Length: 230
Ligand SMILES: C[S@@+](CC[C@H](N)C(=O)[O-])C[C@H]1O[C@@H](n2cnc3c(N)ncnc32)[C@H](O)[C@@H]1O
Image 1 (cartoon, rainbow, N blue to C red):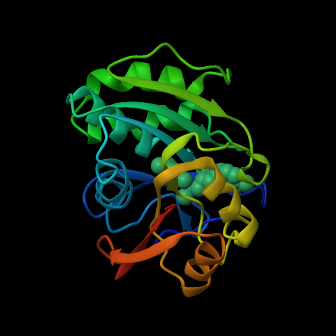
Image 2 (cartoon, rainbow, N blue to C red):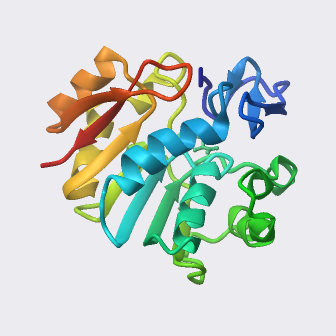
């Protein structure tokens, strides 16, 4: 189960590296985790890559990620680009960027079998700029140090990876107002995917104008949600 809160909280809390059930690494922060303990790579691949990126069915996909965190979704997307499957413009929001030392210790690129990507990945994750980085291997990337509650875009994205901490820990991420922003940010036909399948979240998405389907979830979760802007 993925749970957590934003980067605010008791200063005594430390991020710790945790091995998940599929052997890939994530971070814990107190009792919470950045990914499912049933498998970080397994969860991200299932929810964001298969049900989102690949389901978009386009040769070029503009992705918006809510909650860049450790960058695992970014790296999985980059690998799809390097495999020649598509090209991606990737905008990630992260108001509380992690330090490069933590990203370095996680070794996500090695977990994915692409150790040669580690340095370029680290460079992008550790960079202070909000500008687009030089495109590489079919991926263009920028990180904005901004909260989703203040992000505005109009018909600019094909897929949103909605990877916030769980509603019981960060309810302000899962509101009607936030989903209205996400609806506006997507192009017609665009998809928003999330690991969360809570009824309140589904209803907030529907109230924002989305058509919402429940899909089978990754290991440890019965269902996930995919919302479409028609
Ligand atoms: C579940 S973690 C994301 C995991 C990440 N996708 C990964 O692969 O490591 C949730 C992330 O949302 C970020 N976050 C917290 N408040 C936010 C806000 N208001 N807007 C956008 N992201 C926020 C947190 O700092 C955290 O990194």
